Amino acid sequence: MMNNILLIARLIYKIINKAEKFLLVSIGSLATIFVCIDVFYRYVLNQPFLITEELVRMGQIFIAYIGLGAVIRSRKHISLDILSNLHFMAKEDNQRRLRIFTELIGLMFCSVLVWLSYNYLILGFSAGKLSASNLPLAIPYSFLLIGFVLASLNHGINIFSNIHNK
Image 1 (cartoon, rainbow, N blue to C red):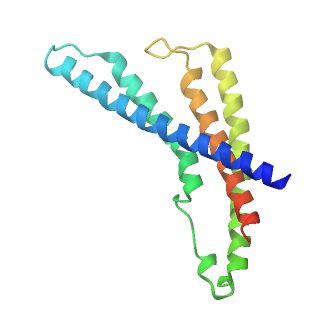
Image 2 (cartoon, rainbow, N blue to C red):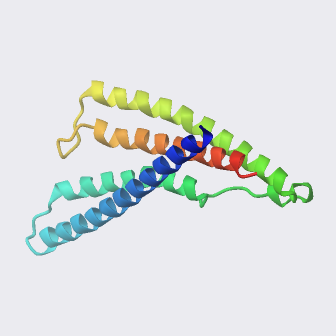
Image 3 (tube, helix red, strand yellow):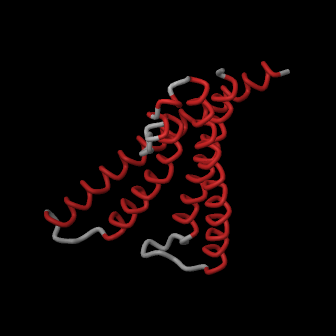
């Protein structure tokens, strides 16, 4: 039973990882193309292409929040390692406990942010405001929710892997 759960968790992990990478590269590439189009319209045709600025800005927001999950999963985010460098933390078992503890704090924090970003998204839908490109503001607000859900999932995966890698 536990092996099946581990196989399913690894499959979900791989799918999320590949989807994040694909989305990050795709949005980054599209943002680059939009900036080139904007430069062409601005300086060659003397006519700014206004929607590109907003689409690039939304792309940057998307990259930041979706990239959050990828950074947490790879453990490349900014962290304090003062405790892990102390002498009593030299034992691997103590370091594993500290990693689990910090991942739990991160999971709790991201869970609160999921709840808050969900409420913010609902507010965006109910407000019905539109951006300059006539897109509902709920679209960029959804990036917050998606990013924090992915961050929470990755904290959970890190906790699970630390518990089972004794």
